[in-house]
Length: 325
Length: 262
Ligand SMILES: Cc1cc2nc3c(=O)[nH]c(=O)nc-3n(C[C@H](O)[C@H](O)[C@H](O)COP(=O)(O)OP(=O)(O)OC[C@H]3O[C@@H](n4cnc5c(N)ncnc54)[C@H](O)[C@@H]3O)c2cc1C
Image 1 (spheres, rainbow over the protein chains, first blue to last red):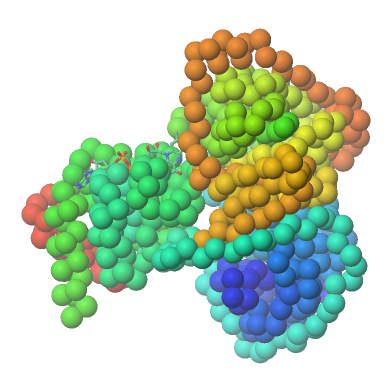
Image 2 (tube, rainbow over the protein chains, first blue to last red):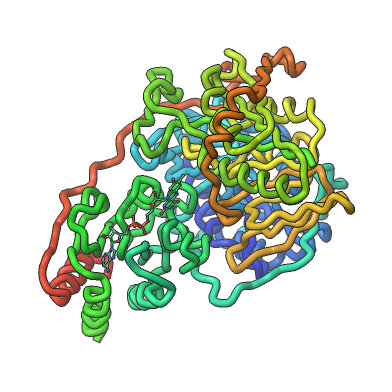
């Protein structure tokens, strides 16, 4: 039986990354449509926790304990081990997340196997014997559906493409040792630094409250963070706010930042420049608070409140509080 | 130190005129081309490194013949020279083929570092650099916020951004590094730089020059194909609310409640 593979990515604590739970759910849907098996691969110095979790989504998990993965960058080691497991059938389909780790795996795996890559999928179905991959291109202006000429390849999946759902049964875990020595150079991790108050990853957030130059400073971003907290959302930003040093680059949305697709995007003091727009215009609902009614964001937001954010936002916090009772 | 920076001409996102031609390939005539913005961060990082400790910067691109015009701007920022791989066979290249061609071009050079941008604005998925590194068996360091090469030890240290902070990575050179905007704002070309760029060398290479077998490369060998395209559903009309802050706040809460977001 053919296999639809999903590469399990790990969080810092060894648990399974959320994007992998979504990719695994998608792999299962595709496998059902294709009459194939959905299987996972986890590569780590200690894969047990991630493999156990991945097995709640797919019927088989190859769990590779690779001591080399301790103290070394994960992606190239993972790519090589995955290549050993999946073999060289050009009809093989492999799903991985579209974040930094997933991209690194996908690129190396393509070079090792000769499989093609389709990137940043926002949806995948099974059609004509292979995956049909939907991608949002040109800053959200066009949606393309692409396939592989060999009916198999590597697909990087955007967060929130599907809702993760565990399977009814728990899959079997096949512990394995790495089968050979590594041919790709290992890169040493000499230090791991956790920064205080590292924010929730914006790519995965259902609600994003974002601040721009209009927020005025780091203090203003505390106001943005309060709204995000009240809505259970994450904090995003424009490049102007990042360049000013008010918020870390990891929170930047746009052409040279992250592309997000939350259910709600609340833009505070953001003009909506094209380079910002391409990172957020596919959000389900866009609400903007801006004192300039002619700001470009008014052309594509669903709701624009014209006013000073330092007046509207405190009122909004009160209104949300009142509603929460 | 010799740094190779991978750059790509892309349709200018600010012009917002990108489109596919009837062959489902990028219609390059539809929009003005610019250097991919993320590649400019890589170039800026290279310029700072060379300013600090000497060396040269070679730009490497795989692009249609017109790509040299775009490369002039990157040369004006201060790169030493450019190499452009151009071959009619390469139109419509996929990830695998692009990585193979750039790896072959790098194979002709001696370098300490290759710097690449995080991804390209014309639909790139940020996977090509990892492919190149794997093909050339180069140490691969991505998501870089800081780059510190040490010529004495022949090693490079990189801060790699992680979801919770950063990791410090270390590898021997030559190595391939994927850069982010966190490395710093790209400079504008100076008038002197623009003048100097006019006479800088842009070497053209065809596949035959690289000794690459064209049969597995380019559009004809692409592993992927666009099946269909559609426009995303249009956004609805915009509701504009003016009034007191309290009215504005109430309008937001009602709007979110109506859409069942809260
Ligand atoms: C190559 C390149 C790449 C780029 N990449 C990105 C990217 O990834 N992400 C990104 O965001 N940008 C990016 N930019 C920058 C982009 O062009 C804009 O400059 C930026 O998005 C503007 O940020 P802003 O909306 O915060 O600031 P501004 O454009 O200055 O807008 C501020 C807005 O706040 C409003 N305002 C001010 N004070 C208040 C107040 N008290 N109450 C209410 N409203 C107020 C103003 O009316 C204005 O509309 C890029 C630019 C280039 C050239």
